[in-house]
Each structure stands twice: as C-alpha cells, then as structure tokens.
Length: 324
Image 1 (cartoon, helix red, strand yellow):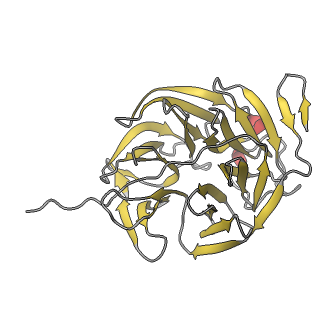
Image 2 (cartoon, one colour; image 1 turned 60 degrees about the vertical axis):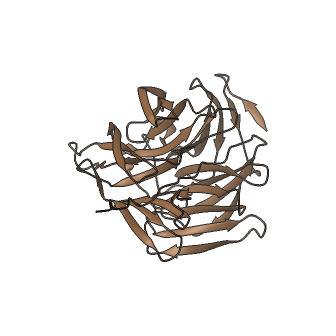
Image 3 (cartoon, helix red, strand yellow; image 1 turned 90 degrees about the vertical axis):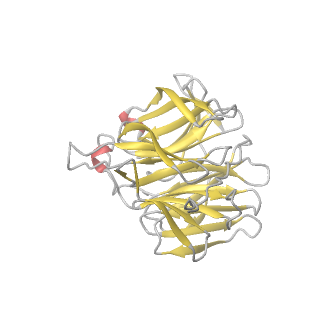
C-alpha cells in the first residue's frame, strides 16, 4: 500500500510484498544483472568471491563460480567475433571472461593509475564505464579514484576523477545523461552524455543523500527515466524523479541493501542484493547498531508494476598487436 508521509513523499510499506528468493548469506551481494535472452538473473558476492545465477522459470539459483572476485560485470559480445561472455571488474583490474575457464586481463592500470574497480555498466555502443576507488576510513589522505571508459577496441582512458567510493551507474532512457554514485561522498552525480563519442561533461550533483538515509550504492534507471538507488545502511531503495526529487521510498528487511536491477518476463520484477558483512561503519548514520536486526545477505524480489529497461551489452575485444 502507498502511505503518504508529511513531506508529500510516498512511502511504500512492503510488509508481505518483498520475498527473499535466494539466501547464500552473501558477505557483499552486488551487481544484479538480468539476461533477457535466457531469463536468468546473475549477481555476485564480491567479498565472498562467488558468482550466481537465478533461473526465472524454475525459481532455482546456483553458484556458477567460486574463488573469483567479481565486483561488477556486464554482458560482453565482442565485435571481433571472439567468444561472448562478460566484462568483469575487480580489485585487480578489468577482465574479459567467457564464463567458463578463459579469463584474460584487459588492463590493471589506466594512464598510470591502478584499477581497483567496483561497479560498471555498458553503453549502447558497446563501451564500458567503471569506477575505481581507494577509500580508507583509517587514512584521511587516501588517493581518490577515477571514472574509466573502455572502448570496444579495448583501449582505456580516464574520463573523470576525484571519486571517493565508486558505485552504481545508469543511463537515462534518452541516453543524454549518465548517473554515477559516489558512496563515501553521499552523492549521485549526473553528466551530460554523448552516445556517439562516449564523451561526458557538465558533472553536477543529482542527489545528495542525508546521513540518516544511508549511502547511495548500486542504482538503475527505469523506462520512465526515474533513478532507483539502493541505500546502504538505509534499509531502503529510493526512486528519484528526473529532477532528483524522492518519488517513493521502499523499505527492505535488510540494513545493507546494495544494488538493484529490473527483470522478469515483463521487466517489472525488481531484484535487490544485500550484504551480511558489516562494512564502512565510520560512514553509518549516528546511532547505527549493526548488531540490531538483520544486516543482509539475501537476494530480494518484488514487483511494483513499474517497467524497467534491459541493460546494454559491451562489445569489447582484447587489443590485437599490429602486424609487422
């Protein structure tokens, strides 16, 4: 039911409309990604080093890979004709993976900067955008990270910097805006985006999240152009209108919700990951008690009859040496 609260925002109270459809006690569940071709949802436990799939038809989930760190992933269909699979980002770099045994490092650094990566997203031209981060609560002088672009030919470049803790990315339906969450800065930023060139400009604050609402983490953009963001520490997913105003808040039964994706046969199903390992306590709201209540670790599902959009697929190939 929709319950109006005093400031006019609608708060959705999902008492019996949210279910946990998989529970592997993920330490840091992240990066849910729906495959429209196979009707499967993929997600990762980046800290527990496990990669999963949930099959819509059977309602069953399985561990696909263990002992491999996946912090972010996008489907990859190389224009070169190489085997399809994934582009994967992790704390050691950017990789191409066939989903089986073949794993190739694309790069461990860009412009001399180390690729300690988190989330990523593909664009309609087959490029990949990903963020690096070096946030350290024990060191006020930790280096800042970057927003990195990987082109379809495998070339890489830094397109923005000054990032504290890189997280979710999403494109507006008209492809004129790229959204990017910096969790430690408590901000979702927006850029003007040129889909033809892959260029970004005019960085600005789209939303500044108050401390008592948690940290902006993984995000996606629905078919109506609204931005959905999981709020770590916030026990919620928030839907923002294109002007950055809160349209609704969806409360979840986990303190550390981490990311969100649309999927299902009609693309109105919503999947939300969560994390069972307490992380970044210096950034927690005042009075936050990780020992009180359920932190997380489950994969959640709900359906609000709001349409989402499929994510794009990368088309990245490993650069070939020039013929001599």
